[in-house]
Structures are given as C-alpha cells and as structure tokens.
Length: 171
Image 1 (cartoon, rainbow, N blue to C red):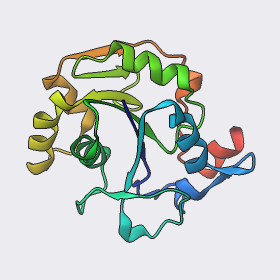
Image 2: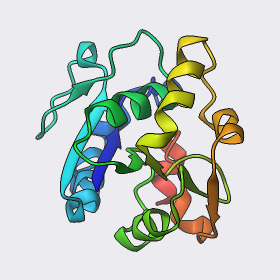
Image 3: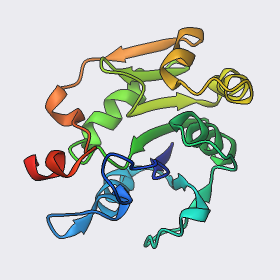
C-alpha cells in the first residue's frame, strides 16, 4: 500500500504552515511521515509553491485549490499501489494501528465515524473523485456518498485535529 501525507492545507486558523509546527521535538510532518513508515511507498502531497522545507520530497497536487480532495486525487494518480492510506498532517495522535484498521476495511474507501480523513482509498474511487474535483466539488465527505465506503469506529481522542495554537497546546 501507499502511505499519503497531506501537507497542503491553508493553515488560516493556525497562522503558519502546520507541517512545520514542532511537537515534542519533531515537526507534525516528521511525526506523520514516521507514522506512515509501515507502508511500502510513501508520498507527501501539497503545494510546491508553499516552499515548505520538508525532510522528504513533496508531490505537488497540480491544482489551484486548497482542499483534501485535490491531494487524494494527486496521490491516487501517482501511487504505485491500488490502495492508499491518507493521513492529514494535523492529526498527530493517529497511530499505525488506526491506519491499518482503515486499510483492512477498505472497499472503495474506509473512513472513521467522524469523516473522510484519515482514510483509506482505492484507485477505484479515483473516477468519482476526479469528476467531483473537475466540477468544483471540493468536499471529500460529499464524494463518499458515491463510493462503497466502510465506516471504522476509532477512538475520537486519536482523531484530534490541530487547527489552532490552543489545540496544539492541549496536546
């Protein structure tokens, strides 16, 4: 499988690129990249124009929009594998076991009860995602309505997003 790290968010509420934010001595990007270390292939997807200094290569998502669907589409197109597990950079509590549970349950997609990310996506989801992205439909959550999706119950504590400095401080 391919591990995908999404680093292209606008970080408007946080005020600076979340990928570069330190947490316990390592950036959120480094922590997430390590979490995906069990995957045969890893891709980091975002915006090359952001100029993020990451310790691994970045695949530009090739769009002008800032939406997770753009990153998932770019990753599924580039991945060597049929199955990709997708981890947003701002979910530092997600663990390997959580991602494996999503992979094991994946049909076209597998997502937690809270929504589309983190998630596992098969290349079979690509036509729907591409069509929606091309039409300006940027909601990955809405795209799930057209896919065969498994819902995986995951402890909500593991799914905490870092959207603000206060969120980071609470971790």
